[in-house]
Length: 102
Image 1: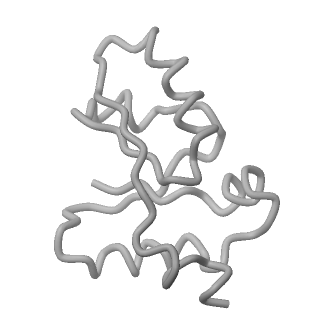
Image 2 (image 1 turned 180 degrees about the vertical axis):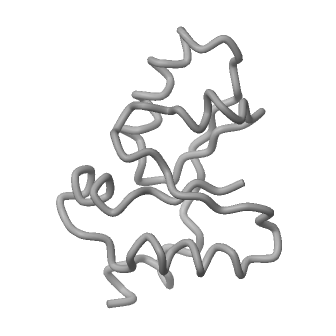
């Protein structure tokens, strides 16, 4: 399962609007072979209701989502289940970094 961040969340965290809309990002992700389900994320930073509802074994954050990862790890102390938390590495950043693709 992949959770795609709301546009307003991205704008708040990165200080700019996302390159692709939430709808576009969901459509891109649904085309990927290894993804079973894609859904939009919470509308408010720090809610984590999707994690509480689905109780995943692993919660993975993108390499540029350190603030979200840290917030989640703080909230993890009060969650009844304790998923593993990982930070993903960028995929071929010399070729696929957003600044290079623009």
